[in-house]
Amino acid sequence: MSAVYRGSRYYTTTSPRLVDRDNGKEGDMQAGGAGLCWPIYDTALQNGAEFMLNCKMTKIIRENGDRSGRVLGIEASFEGKTIYLRGTKAVFLGTGSWNSNPTLKQLFNPWLTKYPHVSGEPYVFNDGKGVELALDAGASLATDRGNDWHGWHRHPGSVWHSIDLPFGVPGTAEPLDSECIYVNAQGERFMNEEIGEHSPPWVGGSHPFHFAQLCAAQTVDKDGPVVWIILDEESRAKQGLEFTVGTIVEDSMYTVSETIEGLASKIGCKPETLLATVTRYNELVDKGADEDYHKQHLDAKIAQAPFHAIKWGIQKHNTLGGITINPKSQVLDWRLEPISGLYAAGECAGNMDLIGLAKPIVFGRIAAMTIAKEE
Ligand SMILES: Cc1cc2nc3c(=O)[nH]c(=O)nc-3n(C[C@H](O)[C@H](O)[C@H](O)COP(=O)(O)OP(=O)(O)OC[C@H]3O[C@@H](n4cnc5c(N)ncnc54)[C@H](O)[C@@H]3O)c2cc1C
Image (cartoon, rainbow, N blue to C red; front, side, top):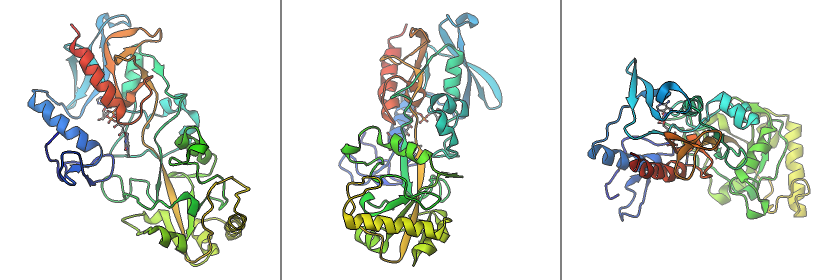
């Protein structure tokens, strides 16, 4: 991949940064998906592939119209018309996650239905229809990692959709867990702050999932669970953090005050509750032992004004679980028999226990190599 994609044509699911790659050129590729997709897109065009953008699959068609026949093609809507496309060798499904599909959410992980906000909307809207259509055609569903909905990420100060295009502020306002506390909408501490996606090995288990479960028990607002990070000026300065509203943090997700009581008023909890939380935490720091939540590193009191509150934007980036596939990327029915002519990879597919971009890349390639051998 030696082509230079400087100032890539489109932004990506991640922030619009240029990154260094191993082609020896400095900062010449767009971070994230565009850096992957555009070279592949260009190569496919050069090799005669045809793209029909804004073409939505509405049905998967099997031979003889029943669930035993080979998959022949799809029905789709394109430019206001219903069209039919025959797969010369097979039909491949790469329709992405079911993040925004209430039925599949309910099915895979009911408690997640209380989260209203999905990362990337409205620029990305993963309606899970590809999964639904595969089920209609006889596919089965598989979970990965016991229904773990991977993709829980914490973005301090940003919900990734309200400032700038697309996906909001980059969000580099992440304080060290040892230098801050998390409080809920009531101003109470409710967890060991070290249990998050960067948590140390002693925590064990699936960290983002565990974090999400802890937060799920808290009060939810329009953006999801309410979790405020509280730290003082000394910690902020020590870590070199900047909370510039509009570029680093969203205005609704950051506030600062000369007093803890003032901070409480600004984040909407009772001043006496937040004061009691901070006082208790400072006592624990003095003791050198977190008797309440067993945090291992208590490096800083919350004592020096001004005091900062940054709200976590807790995001579901991607899902696990989907259409059952086997190691050849063939879609399986509920008897775990391959459905002839139907393949899937990426987030719409389950059973192969990968996450994120590895899912479409690894099993998409395997599918392509297997389909090439189809008669
Ligand atoms: C904000 C954010 C940050 C992320 N960061 C990372 C990261 O750092 N690392 C990482 O590995 N992963 C990351 N991910 C996850 C990663 O982007 C996804 O796992 C990956 O893009 C999934 O690829 P996919 O091809 O399976 O699906 P998608 O990229 O979602 O593509 C599916 C495509 O199918 C189309 N489609 C859906 N239904 C139909 C239909 N019925 N007919 C026709 N087309 C249809 C959709 O429009 C879409 O274009 C992130 C995701 C988000 C949202």
